[in-house]
Image: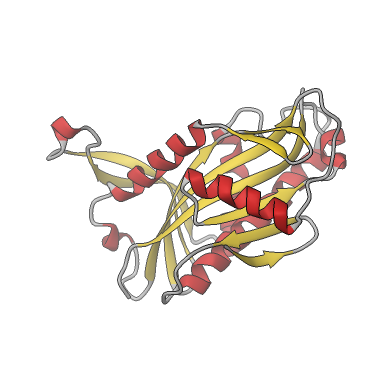
Length: 238
């Protein structure tokens, strides 16, 4: 595990083979996470105790991802992109169906096929977290949704590299516990990384929040931060 980027509130960790296009792909992931945290933070400041940004799971989170993708790709992004997939069930393995990809996005030299899921991580006390088992299932599902796409190479300019990104956005919540800021010590980062790697990640962004965020929104539980649990996979050979 390597530390790719760090600031006061955010850190990006990765364990990806050093192949052509890796720098652009990892940079894209980092920028996506950071811009999403900015969008969520801005939303909380406008709140008058209406719906929490994470409260209704996956769909509201896509609001902030769409804003962020538009910014970092200069609006070279489509949500709910129409694609064809091989069927998931073995009995229908020779059949195809039309489906939707959460996002197709492109930067200068690289395009991305992105599937997004939402999950939760629970905080109990200092350095004690529960990463729910459903997160692994969600990662597997997102991977399959990308892997089953037919003619992936036709979904981008042939001059560009193509990556798949399976992404779980997992807020960290605590119930009836005192708010404490997450720590980015080496020991803690090793623990976070091992938990996310068990889910299937090879790249992770961690956003730690101040208690100001919780004061701005109306939610039963405190939100301590967000894990952006990612699996980047290169599709094209070049």
